[in-house]
Image (spheres, helix red, strand yellow):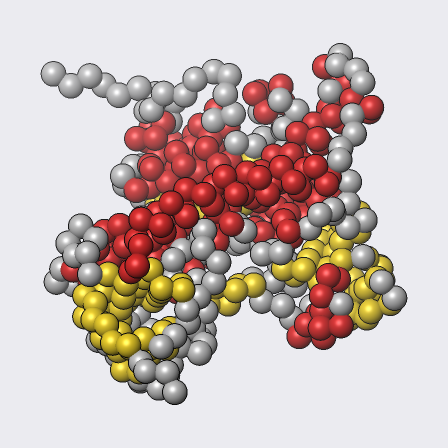
Length: 476
């Protein structure tokens, strides 16, 4: 029997992803006695399998797709442009490795205080990893999440692993499949599905509930679905039957009164992610769990109940995007070395990098109380700069308090949505009214003029007497 080693640490961080490294960066300013434990690959979900490689992939797809629009501008020969997707995937991986390399440098700097292994709680402040028992002052749980695969697909994957992929595995392919069914119309499913379609893969998207990219505004949802269906097949159904047929998978579903069936080489499961909390021994030490399978915690302090344990990042299931994971890590790191305090969370901002972009900022339509707000509306179908760029598809809804005009939130599918979402998030964060926003400068011609048109519509609905003059009086 191997003798167990014993160590003590002021802080133990479980997970070397974005949240864990953000926590480390804050805590190390106050103590160097920090141990980092990581069970999986280093490099963060964002850099290794998420944000960064997916955006490289999407950029290549959109650049290639652009060939269809060149002829209108008198640029000929677009139909002769071809793509080698093996080279595209090789490029994606090279860029992935480039971004991961910066993370690995940080890991190397931690030195011997970085342990590769799986941690398990023995007591609220005692852990075992490999053959080492660690007594900790505080512990930060930043174990991330794992792609979820529906049970029927798991059975097919068990027989032929390459036939069913997760979003974590897509960029490891040497070449793209001839055909793919993407299950899930959330941000990842939509981004990757549209990109593969634009790269020449026969693609069919499937959603369970009739929404896309996390939208909740019914009108924006329907506009988005129709716009996407003009480009590629997109179906909604409560149940799909899967059956392995040789080296293909047959999918059968009911659409309205009609039964439909397709066969594809590969299924990409983009059906969400599950927090990595199993096998840690949290239940055994009495940690309370919420109905969604996550330890109960305070989102303003990141502390789990009254335990000396904090939680941060995708494992919370709260806001699974990088800047929120980083914030949660910083909050947890701060509270591990100070008396625990509550932090004000940033205005929510979520972007799906489809084309057009899908964006939610501030309060969603679902979160608002009927009768307490007005909605500014605009379509981008005839918006000037968008039309020049041949990107004139989009709908934007902005929500404002019906009395004060305070900006509350927005949902959109729109060209340059990623930029308009940032402008609106800053406005909401600084508690601007629609009238404050209209007093800001808008250049001509830019896509953001569509944002101004929407703000004008909202202002008219809130106070028609204040519309028109959008320049502030000079105070003496």
